[in-house]
Structures are given as C-alpha cells and as structure tokens.
Length: 203
Image 1 (cartoon, rainbow, N blue to C red):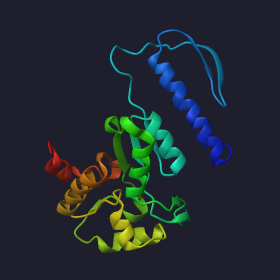
Image 2 (image 1 turned 60 degrees about the horizontal axis):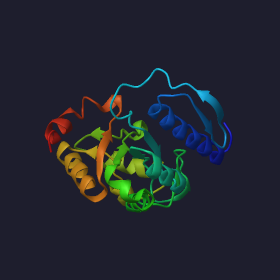
Image 3 (image 1 turned 180 degrees about the vertical axis):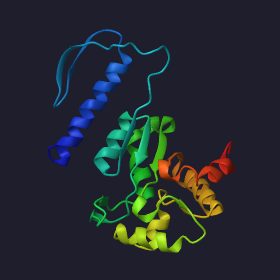
C-alpha cells in the first residue's frame, strides 16, 4: 500500500479526479501526482442538480487541511490528545477537538459555513457507543485502549457512552461547541440508539 504519505497523496489525486468526474459532461484529461489520465469519459452522466457530496475522514493535520479545502462533509476520527500510536492501533496527533475545528476553520476559510462536521462513534471492544446506566467501566476501558485519561475520553465527541439523557446532552453540547451535526452510529448500536434519535428528532 505504500507509506502513509504516499497513501494520502493518492487519496488527494482520487478526490480531485472524482470531483472533476462528477462535475463534467465531456471527456477530460487529468494530471495528478500519481494518476495521469487521458480522455476520461464521465459516464454514466449524473442527474441534474448538485453532485453527490464527498466525505473525507481523518485526524491528522495534513488530511484535515485537505478535507477543509475539498470535502463537503468532514468526518473527524476519534483520537485522544496524545502524540503517537495507542495500544488500539490508532495514531494520536496531539490535538483536541477544539484544535481540529480551529485547523479546519483556518484551512476552509469562507467555505467553512458550507461544510458539515461529522464524527463516527465506534469502538466495539469498549462497547462504544453504548446506551447504559453503568458507563464507568466502559469509559475506563476506552481510556485504557486509547492510552489516555478518563477526562480526555469524556471530552471526545465520539464517546457515546451513558444514559439516553447523558448522550442527548453530549450531542447537543458538541453541536454548540464544535458544529457537529452529522453522527454515524454503527449497526450493532442502532436499536439501542433509537430513543436518542426519537428524543433529538427535529431539534
């Protein structure tokens, strides 16, 4: 697959190619760092109206700056504010959620108002997300899995562990603090999150 820097460069090529493909009606040439294409035929043609939105996910500064410039939806990966790998295999970049949002705002400039900010809550090993009245053991386990503190875990918008009331409060808090309006809940948690959806629908 290549080193991480090369993979990011290939993704950047792909996103730009995809945007041109979705916006074109005539054959076009594409010159990227890793892709050099001639006579790309944009077929089948998209229906009238805006193109499909593009979501880019990541946590590192380079990926977030690119997403701020090119994406329609930015999914900020759940990372604690540590530097280096966690035992769970994720990489921390020493950034809080506030740091991530500040970086995105700076890179996006005027287009920030048109972006949608998303987080994906998923850590099955710690039963996260999990609607429960006894959250402490799962929060402590998640902190251990991520090599961080309980306080840092509770500050992460991706941490959806607690009662329906607690989770609803966290979702509304994070919308106010970080402009998060797009939540992704994994399949295994859909039924238990139905009361959360019902509580927040229309708000």
